[in-house]
Length: 326
Ligand SMILES: Cc1cc2nc3c(=O)[nH]c(=O)nc-3n(C[C@H](O)[C@H](O)[C@H](O)COP(=O)(O)OP(=O)(O)OC[C@H]3O[C@@H](n4cnc5c(N)ncnc54)[C@H](O)[C@@H]3O)c2cc1C
Image 1 (tube, rainbow, N blue to C red):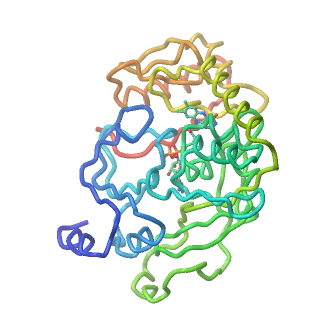
Image 2 (cartoon, rainbow, N blue to C red):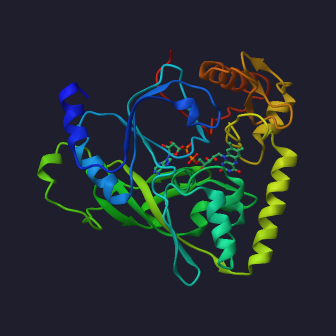
Image 3 (cartoon, rainbow, N blue to C red):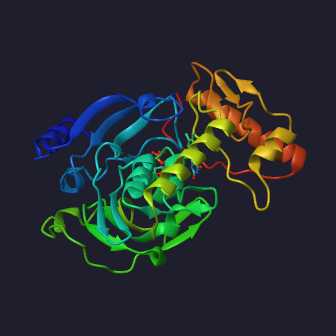
């Protein structure tokens, strides 16, 4: 964005928070990485619509939740990071067994809310330290449950600020994989069409999750709370939660576990700079202190190479890597 565009942008009736040169290490669970040129945290869904309509056409945009599956390179992110956590936070009972939850709500909060409302089947969300938006984008899951198993429908927004409701049929959904199928011609769920002409040059294909309607089974609060407790204890026992990490770095290959292969290759404890393959869980890379994003990315590459060379299995990172090298 040039100076006049920034001014025009700031003059819009925005109610959220626009910041410049924001250190992304505060917004990713690895606690490493560079600076975002701009960061916008919308006040609510309506404010997000105004923001997207006011954004210059050529401004790069990247959506971030809790950054628990994200590596931001040390050279930082050109353009604007849209921060959902702490922004889109509505969470309510919509109807019997169905919750409406906005994209910025954390998994732990969702799990506790479901337990309070005597719903069962939401405990697994407590173990995933991301937002609902990030979990929808990743089809996050654990212990046999996955996010999209619970989805009735989702609310998405495009670059023009238009809202649409979509269902699971509109996506190709798999293990840590969600991709929109080619978009049908649909009319906006709400919002003003008046800005449309102005934005005809903006590609509308890219969409982000704003909210979801999730369906659970009827249960009881005590059992649901106990389930959350058991699950969290299991995580504490098996994961290196005392050090900054991004959960499992690699997707599990079919019928195998990435952690088993990494350990088999003698890579547990392997360190580059401040990044280390965890001694506790080989599919975790931990920041043992002062790690750069480059340390982490180089260690990821090293693991990929060694596992391929020694076992012939090509692992694929589950974590998303964005930004420029330093
Ligand atoms: C200790 C630990 C344990 C973990 N355990 C698990 C686990 O058991 N199972 C599991 O699946 N994952 C696990 N993870 C990984 C991570 O928590 C999940 O992938 C989570 O879904 C990421 O959510 P987030 O809000 O942090 O997303 P971010 O890391 O902020 O973003 C991840 C991706 O989602 C996209 N995204 C974020 N919000 C939106 C949105 N609103 N609309 C569209 N795209 C969006 C981003 O652009 C990015 O590409 C773990 C991570 C940690 C640190």
